Image (cartoon, rainbow, N blue to C red):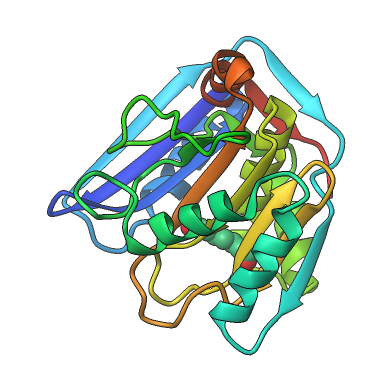
Length: 238
Ligand code: PML
């Protein structure tokens, strides 16, 4: 199979990214679809890579949604939900980091922050880039997308649910995420035990800060990273 990845930027800022895992006969169609995604850009990077060893899982994490009056209440709920696994003080600190710009320049990180689930230590080797969950897709993307949209979810859910599902598959103990898109305020927490819990809203409209944090066991760091960045995964259904 082939992994197809697209990244687009405008004046040095990332504006769009997407990934598919497809068979050869769907390559051209997929490349064209991905090229049409970014609305404005001055650079598009397209990478096609053969993947020999693809793992399959039957279903993604279970999805639920909780709605709140404001992001303060939603963030408190995120802390409450994850506190069975991560200390409250660590969760508060990480939420603060994401909401004020996680990289060294005080801006959003492209990838996720990696956090030791026990101590709260930051584990990513490059604190500007972070860690990216790649090489993943739905086996029948269009069918899952149609079902999610029918149920009132969004295309963001489609992509974020695939990422959160691969993260759990790879050994991430817990995750917290909300978008850096100013107009997209729904975020989520995820873990093997909680599933994928959407929290709406995790920030105010117009807020440009967002990102992801993955809580991992330090002693499993190497294998988790290897899986997140190098193991191809297809999710069969929803
Ligand atoms: C959802 O609506 O299910 C939450 C999606 C979060 C997306 C985060 C992102 O795209 O940056």
